[in-house]
Length: 180
Image (cartoon, rainbow, N blue to C red; front, side):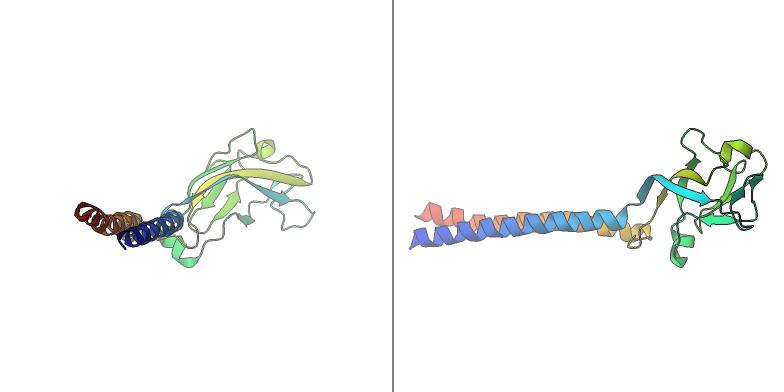
């Protein structure tokens, strides 16, 4: 009878540990997603010249009256999670903010500046591929810093729950072995 009890406890322990390890990985991935900002790396944008007056550029230069949205920002992100670390280039030349472009990081909008840009910014072909690197918040991001701290504690609590589960199951197992 003691062997059946021992085998049952070992099976419960094994299944419980497998289930909790699978869940803790999923919990960890979700916590990472909602507490960390996302890096957009080498994101390509093409500003098309189709000959209209609303182009971002034309054969004579930049149309400074036009702007381009490079990352649409929800209303809550405009104040609580502004885009950070914007780097704009054409692959070989890194453009300088306030010299080559102005950016509204709250709205995710870039405006090209005519002065100082010239041929460095515009290649005067059918498209102008611009490469952008920046950091933004995904839609599930927890904007409040204290909430992010508590959210990060979820993984620690799950790990403690695994430990408590193992101790609760193993302790009676060891107690039964001494008495046998």
